[in-house]
Image: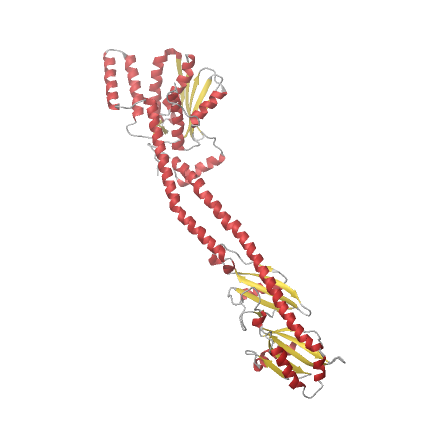
Amino acid sequence: MRNRGGITEIMRGLFRGKLGLPSLQRSLFLIFLASWLLPIAVLSGFIFIQYQQAYVKRTEREMAGEAKVSGVLIKSQIDDAIYKLYKESVGGEWDRRSRKDNFLVWARAELNRKFYMDGQFSSIALYVEDDESPSAYIGKNGYEYGKYVNDIEPVIMRTLDKKEKMTTVVLADNRLYLVQNLFYTSYNRRYATLVAGLDKQRLFSDIPIDPLDPSKDVYISFDGNRELLTCDGAGSEITKEKREILDFLLAGHDTYRGIFSYIPIYRKNYEGCKIDATGRNYEMQLFYLENTKDLYFEISRINIIVFFTIVGMIPIMLLSYYYMKKNAEYTQKMMTKDAQIAALQAQINPHFLNNTLEMMNWQARMSGDAEVSKMIEALATVLDSGINRENDTLVRLADELRCGDAFLYIMSMRFGERLKVEKIIDSSTLGTYVPQLILQPILENAIKHGVESVNRGTVWLNIFEEKDDLIIDVINSGKAISDEEVDRIRKIISGEMQLKKSEPGTHTSIGIYNVNKRIELIFGEEYGLSVNKASETNMQFRMVMPISKGGEYEKGGHHRR
């Protein structure tokens, strides 16, 4: 019998009060939890928490790396375009040509040769001195003159600083323009302005982020302005949700973490990061947003695999539980049968034995031999208990005591005054149900290994209730016993020591093992038989069982629903 602590008491109350399981099924249920559900829970917890958190961190690092590389490539293209434009402003050729009458003719040819043929530019406009309209304009398909004048030029004119010698960057109508003033070299006076539009498709062509992927969004702003350049085509709308994330990043934050969910259907948020890049005369911010549903698609696949794996294991788990239950029931049945065999040694023809004993009893009575008659009646009581015609697992304590009293009477006739029996029994416990044939093997063991070893002695039988448990103490006097011998008896009771049936006195040892095993199987491992030294020469065998007066357990060991 194992020690019972606070956790065990809680578990008893949980299963008995809430689930209503009998002790055998409670034990099986705990074994089932330990062998199947706990490993699955640990594995699932590792996959859902440890692995997925590591995957999320790795994905965020990869996302930030892609954004950083994209920012470097885009900045490189902008710087290259600025260099080409700025080179024209410091060259003496434009200064000399501007003083001649055919300047515009030469300028158109020069713009066509240097910028229109360059795939990096989409349009180029030339403003001479204080003209409000382009003196020369060249635009590729989609960058027509009329659209430029109506949509782009007003923005350029509002931001134009005629004294600025460095190239400035302007966003207008979701397009990127470079503005460069041209000054005379001999004196500080502007004579023209070049406005070059960059080809957006070429600008985003080399970045590792696929601009056509609908789950990914790349935006560019300059100098902290809310005006954004997108890479997915002109006129694309920025949703309210995306705008809130972009404003959060514009406010000075480098990353935005969306609401992560292990269930893919609920991942409707975005994650984002910001990369800063500094040019000669501008500050660029690149924003990279991606839908978390697509960002963590691999996690979704793993979750689906784990889910179907667990579902597929359910039939195996149920079959395992079924066979565990059947095996435990079979073990309980065999242990009960072994106890009956140990008590009776043989059950060849019970009806013949009972009828023969009855005939012998009447013969003794007719001869006036009352002592022999009582002995025959006591033996018949013991045999009748061992036969168990109704195949009951549990019997009332009062019936079990009848068998014990009959056995003690037979032993008293054998030992006479050398055997003394003292009993203290709480009458309120007589209606309690206990396993059949648990008292006679313990009493026989007490007499054989205790009283018989010193030729005379006393057996005490105490039965009482303690903390909702039934306590049955069998104490016997005898010779002094060592602690090593007590440990050996404990190993016999627990089954740790294997016994050879050919050895003398083995049947009593088998009896006490069977008693403990049947109590554990019926009521649970927190109950059973234990042995202790009551004194130097007295041994105490204690059986502990729950109080069950037909409430939790019915006669026969079946749980009452």
